[in-house]
Length: 254
Image (cartoon, rainbow, N blue to C red):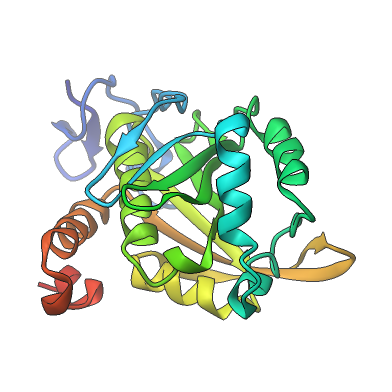
């Protein structure tokens, strides 16, 4: 399949991407304002409720009956780190596992966000993430509602979970853009986004009201043309021995 564009100097067409008929555009007219390049405008596939499996973790749709007790215990362990898990989220902490179970029951049927439980192959449920703000027409979505229990932080969990979700978004669902947004004051999330290969795009001021407080939101993105280098870096990092791993950034720059 091919997409074609008009070459003004030659008055002919050349193939670009695949599957769409040639279209005349204002950009092909001398002196006209520039316009974007042609793209395949077929929609992305809807996100599916399925298991995404990796070496260290797997992600599966939230199961309130199975996940509430272990997620609550892991994220409410009494540590100082546990008390910080919920700082920038609009929910939590929960007084007991029953409260978390009720919240998970609200999450489970949702298609957007589509909530996933992150399961460590060694420790069971250790966190959550979601596909959200899904726009199949424009082929973009966001990774959000990301949180991890203290014992899963600074492990391979978030790196591999993000890799699995990006791979699903770009390769199986056909998105052009994946977004990461966080409270602009959340330095750990901002650092994580940069480490994982997202590009900082700016701050949306007075973007949201969360727990009665202003939230300015920092926006990050990764695009489909950036994904091959990011994927190679993820896979090299995840397959390396933990003691000998270079940084993800250095792997992307190779």
